[in-house]
Structure formats: C-alpha cells, structure tokens
Length: 469
Image 1 (cartoon, rainbow, N blue to C red):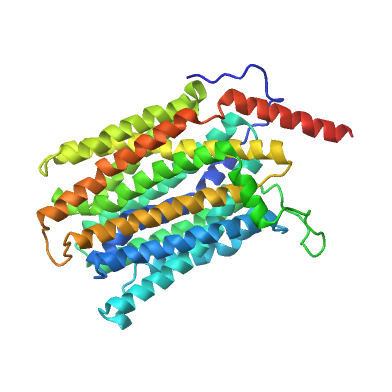
Image 2: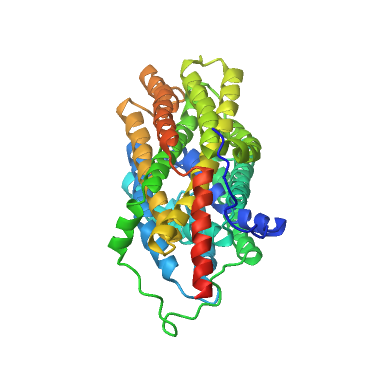
C-alpha cells in the first residue's frame, strides 16, 4: 500500500547536515556494540567460560533486564523534566558515558577471588549487570529521545533512524568481527573475552561523546530548576495512563515486542545452535552474517519506505525473516552453507525490526502532542523499551531454563539429542510464530504517512495561531 499525502503538511523543514546525522548515528554505536555482545555472547560466556549452570546464568541476564526495564520510565520522565546548560538529553549522556563503558567491561571478567563458587559468581554478575543496565539506560534513553526534537519532517526522521541503526549495526559488526579475530588466535577464553569487552567499552564511551559534540540539544541553556521551575505537569501515573491511551502506541509496542523478542531469542540461542548442533568452532561468523546482511539492507529498506510506507516495508522484511527462521529448523547439521544463506536472509528481514518501530514511535509522539498539548518523548520511549526488556528477560530465562531442563552439560563437547532438539525449536519455529503476530499488528497500524501529514499540519496551524496571539 502506498501512503501519499493529499496536501503539504507544512512548509519544507530545513534538512539536517550529513555531519549532524553522522554524529547522531554515532550515539547508538555503543548501544549496538554492548547490546549485541550482551545478547549473542553473555549467556554462552557465563556457561562455557565462567562455568555457571544454565539456570543460574539465564537468571543473571533476566534479573539485569528486569531491573533495566523498570529503571527506564524513571529515567525517561526525569530526562523530560531535567533543566541543564547542556540540555535535557545531553546532560544525562555526558554524566553516564564513562560508567556505561567501565561496567560493560566488568561483565567479561571472571573474578579470581571467587574461585568456582556458583553462588559467588552468580551474585557478582548480578551486581555488575544491574549497575551496567542503569548506566545503559542513563545514556541510551535520553539519546533516543533526541530524534523527535531534532526534526519533525517524516522522511528526515526515517533518515535519522537509518543513520542511527547503521551505526548500531555497524558497531555490532565491528565487535563481532573483533570477537571472530580473537577466537582464531588460540587465546585462553578468559583473555579473549576480557580483550573483547575492554576494547568495546572504550569505543562505546567515545561514540557517546561524538554524538554530544556533533548534535544540538534544543533544550540546552535551560535554567536550572531552582532558578526557573518547570511547567506543572501531570503526575507520573497520569502520564502513563495518557501514553497507554494512545491507540497507535499500543500497536507500535506490539510490533516492537514481536520483532525484538524473536530476534533476541534467536540471537541468544544461535551460539549454542552453531557450536553444538552445526559443529562450528566459533559462533561469531554466524552472528556476523546476520548483522552484516541487516546492515546492507537497512538503507535499501529506508529508501523503499518512502514509496510503499513503513507497513509495506515491515510486511516484506518480516515475511522474508519468517521464511528464514522456519528454514533453520529443517536443515541438517552438515548443511553449513545453507545455514549461512538462511542467516543472511534473516538479517535482511531483521533490518526492518531496527528501522520500522523506531520510525513509527516518533509519529506517535506527534499525535500525543496534538491531543494533549505536551511532548512526552522520554516517557514514550522509556515505556517502549521497558516492555521490550521485560520480554527479553523472559526469553533469556526461558533459554537457560530449557537448556538445563533438557540436560545441557557445559563440560561436554557434544550434547544429547533432546538438547539439540530444543535448540532447533528455540532458534526457528518459536520465533517464526511470534513474527506472524507482528505482521497482523502491522496490518492494523493506523498512522499511515498521509495521516501523519495531517497531524503535522494541524500542529503547525496551532503553533502559528499561538504565535499570532
């Protein structure tokens, strides 16, 4: 379906410079690096390097993500209310950048003072994970809320989202490539992961400072709250109710949850699937193919979206992705070439999960402003990420518990048939069924390009009327 506006929404908006788009995109490189390694590598690191049992290891990730989910609304609302000479969003990014990188590095250390005690290791990684996820939220959530403040143009927002996820996927590709190189050097696994975590942490910190230096926070220069009180706003509970009353937002949440739950469930299982079922020495090559094909497809999908709309892009991409997921279940353990091909096809579809929901959410904030007269980017973004992280926590716990339930043994080079079967189910048909639900939700999503154009027109008319009064 092609969504074409019937009349101009507003006077042409000034185009953002390439340097600004690059700096904005760089802000998500650290998130892409850390999130990718966290999803692809942390569970297998805990079981196969640190030596935790799968149930305990998955609980570490689940606890960290549950905490991460519930600190999102707090940071989102606080960032909306922050007054600083650096701006609402930049202030949070500047203060949290270094803790963000340092705490990520501590994930990849096996502390020698704890020996091999399961409970000691468990609580160490729980503490590090909780602290890191707090710093991650303090950097990434204000960053994502910058996008709707930088431009109101529909296509410019899609372009910004493309740059954002180009850096996100590009950063993840660099981290996975570095991991692959390290895996071929014959290093001890503890040293391999420590190097991977340390270098990734440094790059992540620098990318945040590049974003702050190269973008403009429109709220910069706001007087501190004690000098100029913020306008009176609804209570937190009332704001949450208003956000959930936004019907298109509920559709976006559903689409986002289905896409990312399917992706992260697959990404967590792929290392075990590649090494134990397919018999590969390293899973990094598989992860590189998935992320590499997503990177190549990202700008093509963004361009196509200008013609067929975001829903059309989502239908095409997720359809290809679903086919690939189903194919992974059917292949035999000696079909390595076919597995790589299916992973590449899946990556092409996964690119739409990066692009489409985050492009939709900025339009939802415009509808909310039209209805309520306020902008709540931080609240919308935080709730979206909260629900995504709760879904991820459930998925991570499910993977670890399933492996332990069916007899996974990290001391053995091969696993039982029951473990191999559950790996195939977790990597293929289960995620495919979740994607099918996302397709249904996308079909009924109401904010087409023409509807959004009308929203912007009405907002512009309201602002012009306010300026004349």
